[in-house]
Amino acid sequence: MELCVNLSVIDNKNWQCSDLLDTSQCNKIASCEWVNSLNRCNIKAAGYCGNNKINHYEICDGTDLGGKTCQSLGYTNGILKCVVQCSSYDASQCTKASPKPAKVIEFMYGDVNQDGKVSGSDSSLILKYIRGRVGLNKNQIKAGDVDLNGKVDAMDAAFINGYISGEIETLPITDL
Image (cartoon, rainbow, N blue to C red; front, side, top):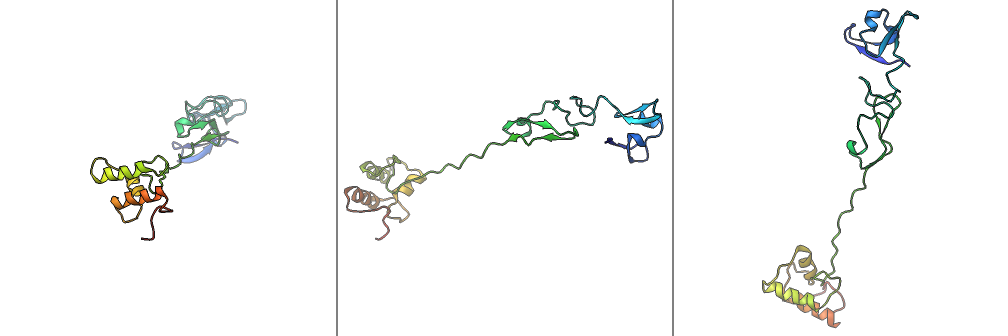
C-alpha cells in the first residue's frame, strides 16, 4: 500500500507516489523517489515507516516513540507502542490508576471523641464543648447530637450517660 501525500504544489490534490509521472514532481515529495530503471516514481524503499526511526510525516516508528511513554501521555504505567502505519501511538497496554475511593468518615452516635466506642469521655467532651473549653468538628457534632435536635447540649451528655449505664438501649434517641 502506498502512502498518500498531499501535494499542494501540484493542483492541491492528493497523490500517491506512483501517480507522479515525472522526476520533477516525484522529487518534490520527501517520501517518494524516482526509480530510473522502472521509469516511475515509487515510495522510498528505506527510511520510512517500519525502520524504527521517526521520519518527517510519522508520529512514531516501531520502537522509536520520540521519547513518549505511557506516563507522558497521561497514563500511570504500561507499554506504549506504535501502530503499524506509524500514524499514532498504541496505548492499549497503558494503564490508568483506579480512582482513589472517597474517604468515608464514619461516626457512631455518642462517640464524640471518635475512638470507636461510647464512653464517659464522650459525655465529658460534650460538657467541655458546652463550656467553650474545646471545639468539635462537624463529625463530632453530628455524633454528639444524640437527641437529633440539631445542637449538642447537656441533654446529649445525659443521654450518653444513660446509654453507658444501660438505661437507654440505643443511640440516637428517636422517641422523645
